[in-house]
Structure formats: structure tokens, C-alpha cells
Length: 502
Image 1 (tube, rainbow, N blue to C red):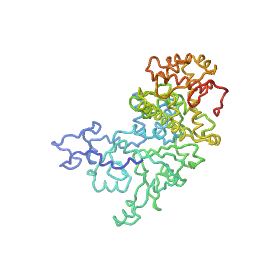
Image 2: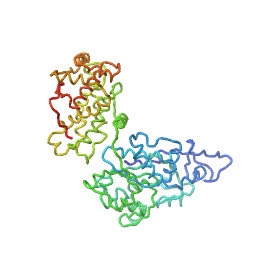
Image 3: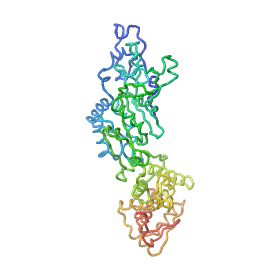
């Protein structure tokens, strides 16, 4: 995703001055600093008078470092929206930024790697001035032939554009067909023909994504997927500032902060990071999945779409997260591929949609119930990479058993008294719950000693739909703990222990 273009169209300019650039008159009021958000310099001359030039002498890494130091002094939260990394990933990130390093985030799918990279823009200034050139040259120190020519011809009248934080972030998803020309650039025959100077003219270059990220952040997702020769080109930029396009050497001392992501499993599956490039990356930071159900629930609540008015009780939310936790330990699931946090997010959305659908069909308040997790199996099966044993059993069966074990994982957290419930079913009794009528379902539950009491301990005087959800959770939790067994339409005592894959 390239956000580096169209910067000039976003800039707000002051009216043209009638006097010579750089010469204030008695009739010309001073131009307020752009930091006050009122008037911005339009030309280099105005910029020299109104903008702190020491800021233009900083590199991108210097800028991010200074802004990070200020945030730390003020006690601001870093990387809002990122949960579960407060004591692991974020301290390592802070150290890498303070050390002015390029870094790589290593982790399996769905661990917020791209989100972290995109949030780095919060460490940049709100706006910075640049020359109106392809490479967004520093007004004091242009690096492109176009920028140097512009200063020679226009001097203090050289036009200035203002780059926002978003303009200074460029992201590329690495694919095996990515070429050096995509990242660095190539000779443009149309430009050469228009200028009439031939292919050796350096102003005939069509620059790629990396040079266009000058004075900003360039992020490469899935770095290992790049061909080795493309990685070597990145290494040359990183180490030497050297670009060779069609055999023409071009020195480009780019001011770019290079950051990367990669899946460590891809090193052998699809490619690898070449040693010279890997050796030049300052820090290698490992990401991870949420380490508690509560962390996962915060992430899913932040990311998932839950329709307004739909209630998802805590025990259902935790059970949704537990599905991902159980899947990450199941031997039938390929753990090298990982189980993305998107599984829990998608499942939560489907659970909420199932509750809404039931309320529309049968009336009543839309409250999520444990049975909605079984309705959400399609959100699970598509996100599991199965081993051979899992393929033999089938994705739906594996997913169903993972859901059952998830309820069993969550139930002990509530310390409910369930012995009378289990004893009732051990006497050979069955329980069948009707689909739509809440009152009928609660009447059926009332015939099981201790079930409604346990449900009330969870629901604490909530509406009947919430009480039914709590009672159903108790039953599903006992199934997951192999105290009961579950048929298509009824519950009964478990005849023997069942194997769930671990």
C-alpha cells in the first residue's frame, strides 16, 4: 500500500508575496509557525523564516526517537490498540527505536505485526515540509537530480509541499514476483524521449517504492518471500545508499526507516532472508499470540463487528477465545502455520449474527448462547491448517471437538457447583432443549437439579435469555470436561471418556 503520492494536493498554501523572497517588509505580517496550525510556508524562502530549520537536519530515525522520548516522559500509552505486548514486544520495540535501528518482527499469522508497523507513524511529526519532487526531497539537502536542479533554478521561490504522517508511510507485501524495478525503479523511455537526453539521463528514471518513501518509513511484509537478488538490492540501499538501474550507478543517500515482518516458518517453506541483509537488520523482535483469554477477548472486542443491541455474555466471549487457545494446542492442527487471532474475531462476529438471527425469527432479546458457537463452525474450519490425522477426521469434526473442549476450558473459572447436575444425568436422564421458546427451555432446565442455580450464579438476575445462555454454558462446559455427552438435540451422562486429540 503506497501512501506516498499526491502530497502536493493536500497542502494548504499562503498567498503569493509581492516582495522578493526572503525579504520581509513593514507591510508584511510575520507568518505564524506551522506548529500553530494556521499558515504554512509555500516557498523555500518563507520556510526559512517560519520553520525551525534544525528539524530539517534530523533523519527519520532521529525524529521518531525524539518523539518517542517525549511520549515516554509524558507517560503516554505507546501503540494504542495493541494488547498483550506490554511486557514483551513493546519494550523491545522501544529499545530498537531509541537505538535508531531498522528492525524485523518475526511471528506467525495474526499477531498484529502489520498493525504495529502502521502505528509507527504516530512517532512522526504531524507534518514536514518537502520540495515538490518525486522523492519529497529535504528542502535544505535534496538528493535527487530533479531536486538539485529545482533549487538551482528557483532558489528561495522553490515550491514547498507538506507531508502528513500517512504520506510518509509506504508498505509493500513481498511476493516472489516482486522485482528490483518495483522496489528501486527503472529507466523510463517516455521521460527520456520528452527530455531528448537519452537513457543515460538520471532524470529519466521512474523511481520505485523505496525511493518514493524517502524521509519516511518503508515497510516490507513477509520479507522472506522476496527473491534473493531483490533482498541484495535492499541490502545495498541499507548499507551503501547505492542504486544501480540499467547499469547506471546512482548514489541515493535515502533517509528511510526500513522495517520488516516475516513468518519464521516461511524461511524453509517459501524462501529465506539472505545472510547479508539479515545481518544488517538491527533488532529481531518476536511476536506472540495472546497469553490469556482476557487479552484475546480485548482484541476480539476491539476488532469484531457486533451489531448494536446484541448481547454477548462474558462466558460466551471467553469460550470464543478458548477455541483459538485449544486449536493452538491440538495435535491435529498444523502448529507451524499458526492459528490466527482472526479465527476468534470471525467466530465472535458469526456468534453475534446467529443470536441476531434467532431473535428475528423467534422474538425476544438477541443474546448469544453457546449453541451459536456450533453455528459458527464455518468461521473455524477455513482458518485451520490440518495435519494428516485431522484431514482424515474432517475439518468440521475437528472444529466441533475443539469447541467442546473450549467450553470445558472456561467452565472451571467460575467455580460452580455442578455435582447435582452430573448425578442427575448419571441416573439415565436426558435433557432436550427447544430451539426458539426461551420459557420452555428454562422449564426443561428446571427439571435438572442444580442447573438453574448454577446459571443464576452466572447471570445474577439478568433477563431470561441471559439465564438460558448461562444454563446452556454450564451444560456445554460439562460436556467439554467429559462429564456429560451431547447429542444433536439432547444431553446425557457420558458413557466413557472421549479422546479429543491431545
